[in-house]
Picture 1 (cartoon, rainbow, N blue to C red):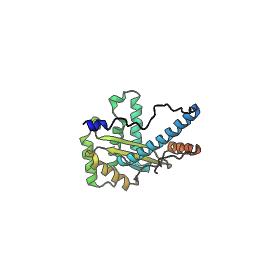
Picture 2: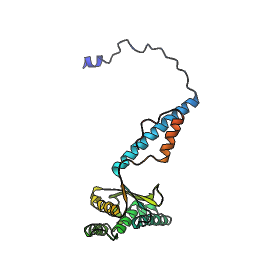
Picture 3: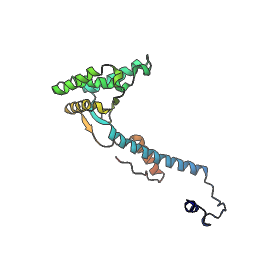
Picture 4: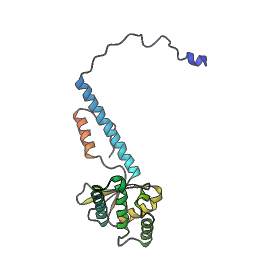
Length: 210
């Protein structure tokens, strides 16, 4: 033990005890560095977030006038209208209501196989109380997609609902939806930050994957 501790003793080399005078950095240069490093950090975190999203989320685009799209949009709108007169705690998460709307709309699609319809019917009956879904549906959302008259849906559920989600995704695909794979493209804010870094003569490192 003594020899181990002795290995930490100074050997007389290295710092000579004299303070080195450093050139002060102008304040504007400090802010420039802060902006540069903040931009690079933001791009790095955004890229990692998109990679994580691709692992955790199931994403599809479908026509905005698709019956499932309209049901999900309507549920979201009704939720936020209701929240004006009720507390969010009493209502629960909006994702649960959008999920319920999606299930009811998908099970009414005309070409849905009977076995899949039975799966959705059983799920709808088993989870008729919205609170029972709270720990199972993590994300169920719909928004306008970049392409005109197109909606983007996102799903993330607990393993207990994987079979139900498979039915939903299969039904959406068979009725015109386009399932997405891999990280989503950079947002307009990522592209703007990357361009500003280039304008400053800085490369937007680390590379941001598309």
